[in-house]
Image 1: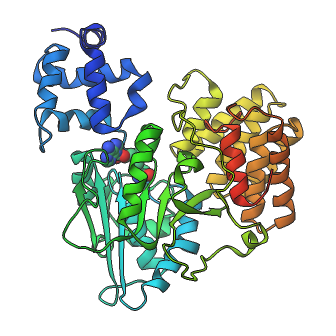
Image 2 (image 1 turned 135 degrees about the horizontal axis):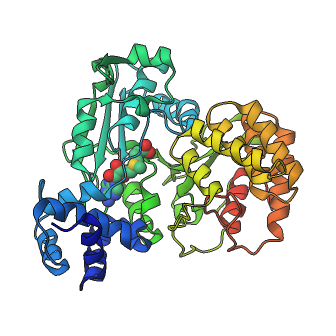
Image 3 (image 1 turned 45 degrees about the horizontal axis):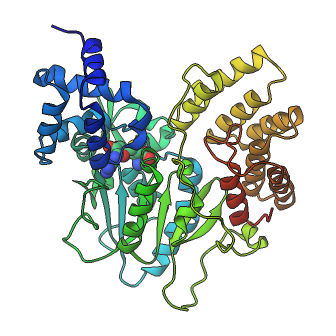
Amino acid sequence: MTSPKNDTLEILQGANFAELKSFIIAVTGLSYYLAKDEDLASRIARRLTTIGFMDNASYLKLIASSTAAGSELDLLIGELTIGETYFFRHTEQFDALRQIILPHLLKKNLERKRLTIWCAGCSTGAEPYSISILLRRELKIQAPEWSVQILGTDINRGFLDRAAKGMFDEWHLRSVKDELKRSCFKKVDKSWEINSEYKEGVSFIHHNLITGYYPPRFDGPEPFDLILCRNVMIYFNQDTVAEILPKFDRCLAASGWLLLGYSEININLYKAFDLIPYPGALIFQKKKPTKEQFSAPVLPILQQFPALSHADTPPIATTPCLPLQIDTNDSYLKCRRMINTGDLKGALLAADDLILKDQLDARAYFLRGLALLQLGKDQDAEQALRKAIYLDRNFIIAHYHLGLIYLKLQQADKARRYLTNASTLLADKSMDSVLVEGDGMTALQLTNILKTIGEAA
Ligand SMILES: C[S@@+](CC[C@H](N)C(=O)[O-])C[C@H]1O[C@@H](n2cnc3c(N)ncnc32)[C@H](O)[C@@H]1O
């Protein structure tokens, strides 16, 4: 029997690998694999180890022959998708839901008392259930008075089966405080099962964002009040994202909301929506079709900035949303990756390690600050970012994040100072340069973000 490594090589070097790869990317949207041939081949090899080895052309024929449940394509998708998720992922986005989006929807729908939410690319369900908990526990939205429908969809049926069971391990609950955990979940062996009251109205169905129909379900003509598609489109290229956005737009009710992952920002692609700046999150609202006088709820502090405008944003860039290749030996990238995947304690240790090696390392302090920020330790994060800027006054992303912290802390003058610093420093950069510690963000993208926040460059 050949080892998986040999199988991987055979696939990689075999005839028709390019066609096989193109087909897979075309049906799943996972452009993430464009620059990851070996990773892709080793995932295909895992399937071939199970079903018996065959050449690339035969395997392509097999996966192209059916898209039905349980088909080989379906099983391959189980190997290809990355389902990292956890409850209340990305604090700032949940703050935006809590403070802006859901209060607006509850007010808007007060008469009919219905709310429909779509979590596209929901993985094993932590995201839809987090929203269910938020609505029921914090916002006191209860059945039968209110009818809340939260639909979770995903391309990976295995994830959906797990989501429907509502069982989670400690890792998925890593950012849930003990008290909340004990009141919303029941411990079953080493896992936690979500209480049935939070399962009410939450359902899961299979849907491929690339090949599927929009909306994903036809049993209710009602458009969605809110669509979340977080940390899904980072795996797609910008053309794919540009195709999906109008479909989301069509599925949204009047003045409905779209919430995407933080690192998926390329503002130029979202011109069809109104952008509502919020510290640490960018949220989008369906544009008003008429002159209807709806004034979007805006944080008091943000009202001090000029109105949002897309008018002078440059044309769509054609680069992928995120750099697709990661040098895994780079300690900074490793630390950043831990932050992005929610391993915040690991990230903090990694940043401290870097500081131990070089106490004048501005990037290390910056990463420490980002990890602290995600852990909700705003004051400590502020100190770490100030230190990073002290060590490197030209550290654009550190100025930007420190500005965001001050926005969050309602300290408008300081926020303005640091956001303006970022704008001033950006003016000297080439617009297509990728910013240090910007998680793939270019000078152009940050310039646009700052404009939406109201700090003209
Ligand atoms: C990293 S998870 C994000 C989960 C959740 N939204 C969150 O932010 O915690 C990405 C999910 O996107 C799903 N996905 C990838 N390609 C998809 C596609 N073409 N259609 C639907 N879902 C897709 C994956 O199966 C995976 O569950």
